[in-house]
Structure formats: C-alpha cells, structure tokens
Image 1 (tube, protein in one colour):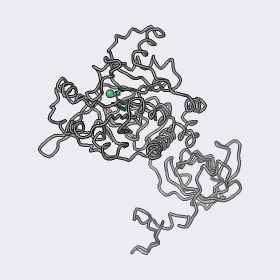
Image 2 (cartoon, rainbow, N blue to C red; image 1 turned 90 degrees about the vertical axis):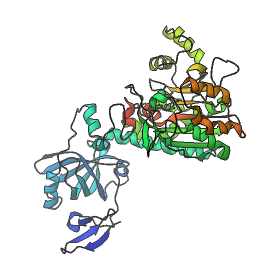
Image 3 (cartoon, rainbow, N blue to C red; image 1 turned 60 degrees about the vertical axis):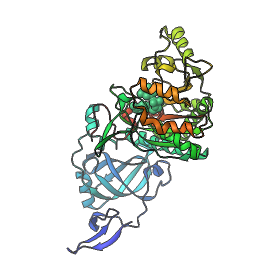
Image 4 (tube, protein in one colour; image 1 turned 180 degrees about the horizontal axis):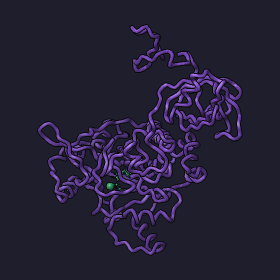
Amino acid sequence: MYIFSMVRSGVATVIDKCNKHIPLSRLAIMPETKWTQIEEILKGQHTGTTIHLRGWIYRTRSSGNIIFMILRDVTGVLQATVKKGNLPDAGFEDAFKALIESSVQITGTVKEDKRAPGGYELQVTGLTVVNFAEPFPITKDQSPEFLLDKRHLWIRSRKLTSVLKVRSTVVGAIHAFFREKGFYEFDAPVLQPSQCEGGSTLFEVKYYEDKTYLSQSWQLYAEAGIFALEKIYNMGPTFRAERSKTSRHLSEFWMAEMEAAWMDLSDVVAMAKDEVQYILGEVLQKNKNDLQFLGQDIKKLQEITGSEFPTITYTDSLEILKEKEGMNIEWGKDLRTIEEDRLMNHFKTPVVVTNYPLEIMAFYKPKDEKDPRTALCFDMLAPEGYGEIVGGSQRSNDITTMIHRLKQMGENVQNYEWYFDLRRFGSVPHSGYGLGVERLVAWICKADNIKDTIPFPRTLLRFRP
Ligand code: ATP
Ligand code: MG
C-alpha cells in the first residue's frame, strides 16, 4: 500500500510501507498497479498481454540500441528485451546504466520465444530503476569463505533461494504433521541451568551475576510438558559447541522435537518414519522446480516416499559392516560418520537403527530389558552420506540409575531434582525424538554442506555476519 503525500519541498511523493518518501517521478507505475510474478509468465498465463513486473537485474548485456536483461523475482528468472524507441529515452538510459542487482519496475508485453530461458521474453515498454546497485561484489567462481563473508548478499543466489524455499516447506510440514495428529506446540526455555546432551558442547551465557547455558535440546522440559498436554512438539534453535569441523554439524541449528506420554520406542520409531515421509511428500508437491534446479532426482525421492524404511539394530549394523564392508567394529563403540556412511551404501531409503550400547548413551535413555547391554533408543540415518537425521528414545523412569549416570559424568545432581520430580508424581512410560531440520534439508536438497541449508550458518570458525 502506498499513501500519497506532498513533502515540504513541493515534490509529490508516495509513502511506502517503511514510511519512506519515494518521489513519484521514480515510480513510473501507479500505486494500484497489479504486479505479475515471473512464474505466471513462464506458465504461459500472460502471453500476448501487457504486464507490470518488479524485481532485480540478474544479468544484463547490451549491444547498441538493445539491452538483454535477465530479471529475477522470488518465483524465477525471465529475459527482458529493452529496445531503444520502445520506451521513453530516460528509461532506456537508466536501463543502460543499471548494474546487476539493481531493483527495477518494468512494463512490457509477454512473447513466446523458444530461444529465451524458460521459453518467454518480455518486450519492455516502460522501465524505472528503483535503486541503482553499486558494482556487486559477488562474481563468478568465488571461494566458499568469500561467499560466507557476503552471506547477506549471497542468500539471493538462485541456489540458496531454492534451498530456502524447500526449508520453508519442511518447516511448514513439520507443524502441519504434528497438529494434524493432535499435538500441542510447547515452548521450553532457551536459557537452561544444565546440560542435556553432554557438557562438552555447552555454550555458556552470563546471566546477571550467575551463569547459564544455551539450550542443547528441548527434551527435559518437554518431559514436564507431557504431564499437562500429553502429546507435544516444538521447533526451536538449538546450540551445541561442536569442536570438530564436519559438513554435518552447525553450532546453531533448528531441531524439531516431539515428546509423548504413553508412547514406547516402537511408537516413536513409527512416528519418525511417518513424519519424514510426510515432509518429503509436501516438498515433492510444492518444490519440484526447486529440486530440479538443485539437481535432485525427483523420481528417486518419489520412490523413497512410497517405500517402507527398514529398522535394524545396532548389532545388525555391525554385522552388515563386517560382512559387506569388511569393517570390524568392536561392539560397544559408537557408529562414526564413516561407519554410518558405509552402512548406508546398502540402503536406498532412510534406515532406523535401534538399541545402541547403553554405556555410550545419554543418562535418560533406559536399558532394554530384552537386551540389557543396549538402550531403548534409535537414530534414523539418511542415505547418500547425509548421516543421522533423527535421534530419539524411550525415557528412563529409574531415578537411581539416572543419578548414578549423571554423577559419572561429573554433573551436579542437584540441578536435576526438578526433573526427577517428574518421575515422582504420576510418571508414565514416555518417549520422544529430535529431527535436525538442516540435516533433513541437506539430504532433500542434495546440499554439499549443511551450511547451505540455513540462512546465516554458525560454526566453530564463524558467527558473522
Ligand atoms: P551427531 O552424532 O550427528 O552429532 P547427535 O547424536 O548429537 O548427532 P541428537 O542429540 O540425537 O544428535 O540430536 C537430534 C538430531 O539433531 C540429530 O539426529 C541431527 O539431525 C540433529 N543435530 C544434532 N547435532 C547437530 C548439529 N551440530 N548440527 C546440525 N544438526 C544437528
Ligand atoms: Mg552430536
């Protein structure tokens, strides 16, 4: 919405959404203009008609009296041909001067043209440059580090735009999935007094005269929440001071977690499989173009959505590694990245691995009485080297064992008294899991590095811009 005004200088202006005065002369197009999006043009909805478009110059080259511009908006890119004589001279001159990433408003006629990218072009009859961009610092073949320095500009690249659209679908699908199943959204504090996933990855925060930590997980608070709401979920920023540089770990990431009263391990394993299938289905429906642009094989993802995801035990996985990969892993050792990847050489869909060795698990994971060396827990691993995407478990109801495990880790048990209360007042079997949003997006988008699945990645070496 624009509001007309007359500033003191006597120049007629319009006031935009941000309360800024824009001289009317800068806006060739009047406020009631109907704006067309590039996607509609590429679908053939406006062929032969005159439309108004606004966006940014993605590429531009001129030869004499003709300028070929590629324009972009959130929906795609379109070729625009600016010919001297077809529009007012001032507009042509501005088009000539405008560098890439200048913002423009354009009027033109849509023509079908097989030679143009996408099969359509816009023959320009009016052009206003809203902002003349300075020379854009990002040119071809820049190093990944440079692109991270310029992340605030690089997120407009077509690649990141596509990934961010998929991410938005994934986040929307997670909310929809749990709400359809009758879960309540439940928020936990981000500032927490103690650890949940191991003290070594805690970020410490000064808290007035005291200290606190950034959340490593929503879980412990969720375990309080289920006694009110029974089935709850959340998606929130999660912080882990990961000391190793990997293509799978961020220091700040988004975890989608669920926790439910009365559910056991097999219930949450089934739910995690359902959830991933549901999310994939939504992305396949809404983001085909983005997946194509990112070089993802859509047919392969469709097949995965329609397949059953296998469940194996940790012990089975060691067998597979031994038999098929010739890897001898000592029982009791955690699966490292290399082992997860080699295991997944033998699966096309995600796989759930249950019953990891109890000794290496977090303090709240209970023993499986049927196989007491192991815990009632699971990870879901993605194919093609994307690693663990979900981790979850049943939760222990045994205060004595939990105290023992916490003491072994050097924790101050006093900090967990409130948590043990949950076992003292009407405790029930309950379970939950966390899905790493960026890990899932990385797999779906075939991203080389998890950094490309979040707008502003934070890692061991970077927290800017
Ligand atoms: P990993 O062994 O890969 O470090 P984890 O066992 O520490 O994972 P969980 O504590 O089970 O992970 O967390 C649940 C999910 O959160 C993981 O399955 C993964 O998808 C995601 N996740 C965990 N740590 C990170 C991280 N540092 N960056 C991005 N996602 C993460
Ligand atoms: Mg970890």
